[in-house]
Length: 498
Image (cartoon, rainbow, N blue to C red; front, side):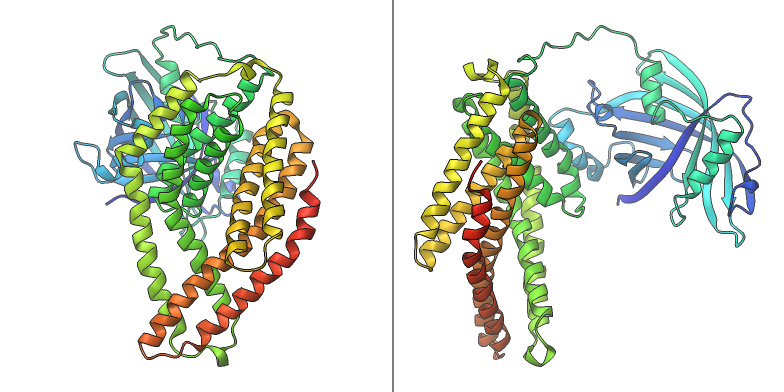
């Protein structure tokens, strides 16, 4: 079973003659214990074209030391990585393979570098004997696999203990710098090994499909950004990281929206089928995200009800309802990521970017083309808002407001995509349209909440419980939706003009 550890560390250049200064002069460090030298042997794996390394991801199988096994590391921030560990085995564990699926696709990972290190470990302890950090001096021998160039170097690595304040690293670094030790240029051993054992083969870069300043260059940059986000967020969803499902769903929606908005740049005969697949993936993820949002809303609404008005086992019923639906929704999301359909979508996105189906407008000035597209989406939003406001309150108006909300998202995404080109005007429009989208979203959440509250009330009644509290919440949701509808004209007035 894989386990995750947050790794916060820093690396420094060293030579075989570099000595470790007296670290007891570091604030809070009372004792330094020399643990002796440990021999480590790690084989790093990647795709033949080094896709993992390109995204600063490392996968290794290491023997020696207290944590031998498989280690998969994802970058979090500079000097911070999440290390996912699995027991030592001959083959790559399935749990780790799943986290690499969006990058490896139907290919395989192979050994690319072998690192053998002699690690001299020093444990930095506080006055109570608690571990603050570990400093190791690593003498490294690297070899490109299967039988490529070799390299060797010495480096110092300082890693904060799991429960320690990461500020200890600043204090240690200050002491190391006074001793003449400088930060390493490479972010990891693997990065340095790949650089120093590069066979030097020529890899000519493909010429960009569009020149700078063109509509094609601007749109493709945005498409690439969203496509890369979809790939990167796949393992985050599998790891059940906070907000990961939402972010992946938004990336799908942004990309699908861009393909629609900028049809004058990219041929819709090629992009419409991709849009259908993005809609499918967002829909599969949406079950989990919608449940997350709805459950949080209902919990908050219930918490606002005075205890004297919470009649019956309302919190328990809500918890049981949420647990079952959340479990099923997560299974559905992961099943979609495990599907061949998802991998086919990722491959098609790569193909689109490698050979984009450009139209004549792609070669034109980006500002003119993007501004025209943004105006068109804004006009579409205006028409839907006006139509919704012309209807009497009720079911038909609810549907029309939901359609206006979707148009607001598209207009906002169009403005966001155009921001690098159009600058402040696009940023201003995005902010104003987001206010409209948020208000319409509040209204739609109320519509969905009322349907759920009706179901919960029916379940409670069938079980012989009072449905009073569910009815109370239903009434509050009606009032909130009514307030959103009444506030729409004013909010829309702020976004009605470009």
